[in-house]
Length: 158
Image (cartoon, rainbow, N blue to C red; front, side):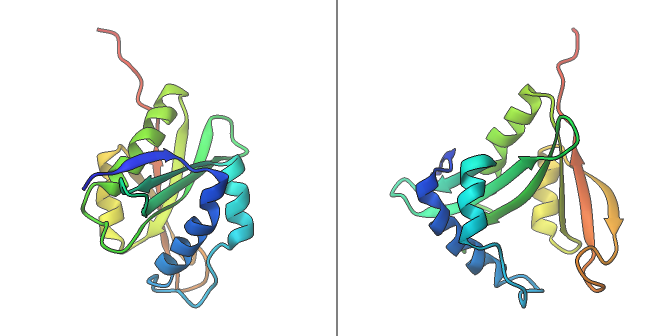
């Protein structure tokens, strides 16, 4: 699948929020509201947010990550793909520039994912994330999350 990945712009935030609502509706705990337009407006302006679009302009997915209070430590908040885009290289296309930037700036990144989200587990493993721990009751009593960490790749002396 042809994909063009660019840094998200202010004009993207409503479309991203719409995809967020659609994608979140498939979550097994979808009774709770996804992030709204307000927060997406700020994330596009102030966080590290990339979008993947088809050559014709359709939004295929996004990734958002932002710094934490720990020095050189980011949190990857979401990587979400439009319906029909899984397994077609879109997720990898989104993670590649993010991980390259983290490596260049020597940044460690953390994320959480549902314990049964095997497509995500497999994708992030290809980019050097490793399972750090299981957090039982992460959101609510019945919502456990796996925490994954990715340390920056460093060049080794030859």
